[in-house]
Length: 601
Image (cartoon, rainbow, N blue to C red; front, side):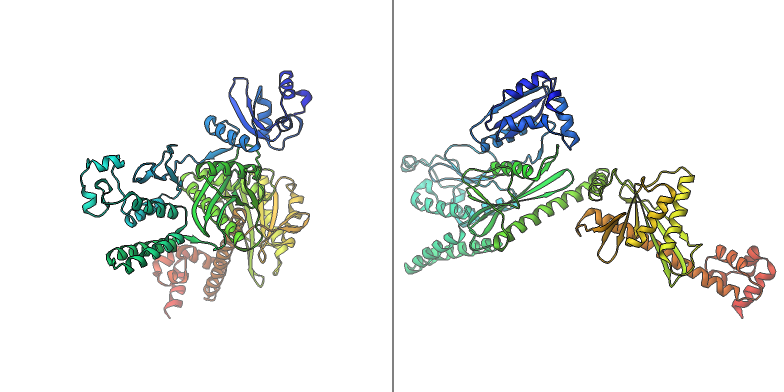
């Protein structure tokens, strides 16, 4: 939509936009918020919607609906992205990326009080307490809290343990003291200095500084041994064993990487999956994957930036180095990006990508079970994009020839509808006009027979036809499609087995799809199914021939009579076990006696 055709009041609003960073909002004629966006330069970014052609139809429709533009100027690009993120979550505009991540993660909090308590919470309160997390993996958080409470005697009561209150003797020993879960600071049996030393150890553990805590505990254990405090030394030894076990369970990736964040992204047709790893002291201490639903034709850079802001809001980080697969459309203050090419950091990025892909596969499996229709449509959308089709391939047919040295030449056609086998539509063919092993001529015959019939019956044609073979088989198919006048109506491709190359008509360079590509998997399934169906028919034909040949060796039994017997009794064994009366009912009394005598003599 060029700016000359834009409504006069929109032109005025565009002219009033500043060259500052900020957030813009598009509204329709009813005042409904359609879209929220951020920009380094508001004037330049918003004007682009009205001055350039949009390849994405959704964006074109959005621009047509705009009746009012509002903007908010902010200090920096980072402020713009944070404000955009919060406004999207609050208003959920129709044309914005949908952040499918409404979880509230738990924190482990060390309360700001005398003899601090440690507990779970999902509410972050700015009261001076220290919060660690949040933990995307609830099992890990529970394990950590259980380990800490078993390592250190911590109070769980809500008493106000101010020194004056303890000195007055206002409190009594409780059950937690008697079962040795608490050292009774309420009765003055544990000093605040000793208690806070334990709290400092806990803080180091929660920050990932486990090695530091282990070193301190070893010093304390040795000091206890020297003072002949063997019971206390034994308790510290148990703490050390637990910490060593926890440390071994952590995903250690490098002893040299101290404090970094890692982000990776995997893109589906309309969904992006962004994985986050938090690495401290060489170990992955937190991991989370979030899902983003595309609405317009957002770039990977925009999707990654949106997810990074959302994740870092939920899981605060002090890392100054962020490992990414490419530079996103946003920069955090006091941080820098790195795109690793080799070494430990590259291995970290690959680990993050594997987690993102695993999350994606789990989601797709669930989608397949919960909403198979949507799952099929997503696969068809993927195939349409990968194979550059003009429409969804809801109807696909695949052909394969089968023969051994030219004997019993047959062919098979398998049909997939909505990315699933439609076995009722499978067809097999006996080759009639080709002598000897000539796959190209055989392909021409079966395609001519198949599509001449569909055209004559005015039946719907498939959107995609696959021939099992390379350029030669594809050329035969192109020849027939042109003769029948359907070359422009149906997309033809050939698949060569050796390297899984996909050939297109009039293109000598094959297409290579990833081995994990869903499009390739569907094509392979079609090809394998056609091969299986064709081989089965070929074996049946051979068996039928050999059985018929044995029956025709019987004097007085011709091919017609042999065929009648096979049709009725299915096999030589069935004929052999039949009585004279049963045989006579099919071929007459005289021939029945001849057949019966042949098998009993």
